[in-house]
Image 1: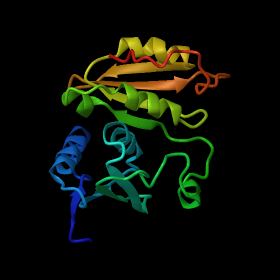
Image 2: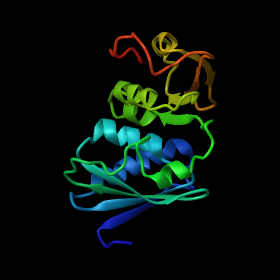
Image 3: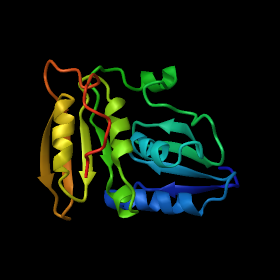
Length: 192
């Protein structure tokens, strides 16, 4: 561990508490310092959130990539290069995913909305970076009905369910014989 980094181990936290803990720690960091995130799954959805909200202000470095523990050093400062780009990572990142069928990409937009932000660019970027056949699981504080039409036009079906805490889990599944990456749908946001 570097002396200028804070360890944030979220493995024992319930999912809805993880992103707030991470972003509270991030906000407390001074430029030139880092947090070492320890997680029980690949935190790539968190990367999308950082890319949307802190572009140019962070550097993402995988130190361990599963299968049980992921460790990522997230440096705070001025960075033209985030250090990692999903889908364009190193050969070792690709080697961790040997099968063509990928697990759903999970994106929790509740922390973004809780801070008064818009998750639209984060959602759009996540959809753009989905692998062929990969679905997107979205957690939101409400059922985002306008997003159903937008992503439907991009080749996705959906399943939504209310959770016990009042929030929603929505899975967007690529329709068979469809290429979700190709769309004529305008980029304007209609996710809330």
